[in-house]
Structure formats: C-alpha cells, structure tokens
Image (tube, helix red, strand yellow):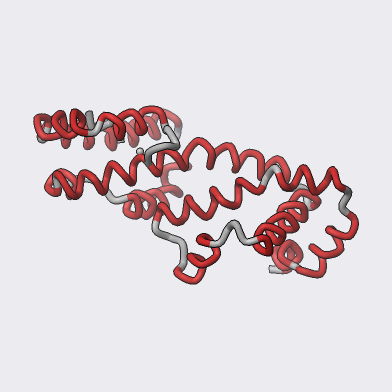
Length: 194
C-alpha cells in the first residue's frame, strides 16, 4: 500500500510538477490518450463504476486533463514510461476490436437472439478470462494453443449450426464484419463467426 500511496500522493505529484520542464510536460501529454482509452476499455467491458461515468463523460474538462497530465508525468518520473507506452499500444489495437465486437454482439442480439445466446457477452468473456487466466498462464504453449483451439471450435460449431442466418447477417452488415476483421476504430469487433 505504501508504494501505491506514493504514486497517488498529490503532494508528490505537485513536487514532480514543480520540477517539470516544458519538454517533460509535452512528453507526458503525448500519453494522455492512454487514459481516455483506459476509461473506454472499461466502459466497453461494462466495468466502469457508475461514479466514474461522470469523469468519462467529461474527459474534455480542462481540470481533468490537467490532473491526467500531472499523473502521467508522475508515473513517468517513477519509471513507468515504457509500461505506459506498451499499454497505450495495446489499447490502440484492442479498443477498436472491442468496439466492433460490442456492435456485433448487440446487433446479433437484436436480429438473431438465439445465436447471441450461444455466445458470451463482452462482460462474460472478461469474467471467463479472469477466472481461467491463472490456469492459462501456467500452461505450456501447446496446451494454450489447445485451449484456444477448443474456444475457436465452439465458435465454429455455432457458425455451422446457424450458417444460413449468420451468412445473411454478414450480408446485411458488411461494415461490422470489416471492422471485426480489421479492428477498425470506426465501428465497434467477432470474425470467427463467418
């Protein structure tokens, strides 16, 4: 707790800000995208606490942006720059896919509810990953491949069972399929089903 407290200490953040150069602040501001993507990731997964929704809706607030800038600069000064860059890259790649999957899932729920019931919601997928992650990370690479092959096989079985309906769905929604395949940020992500 002591180390985390140090990272969240307003006093320490103020001291870091006092020592910051213009270049330090400019560099930290380039990482502010990570915070917005972080909030969006948890929003898309359905895990953003209701109290934080007001923060998410007001990310453009100058006070919030200043706090984020100071916090990012403070993290950088404490040796987390590489971690933040890596996390930003993951969010840049995965948030568009998650957006696309969410649009896919909710559109599927409306048009083909029986098929949607055979799939997991984004929240269920996250819960499953959290539940089995300890087991998955301890598996050998070939065991991990087998685990994910079983998951893909389930998706294939769902597709084969509902092939005509899903093919018609993809014909009606080529933009969703393209977004899923590309991870396009213009539309929210499930290309295994078609």
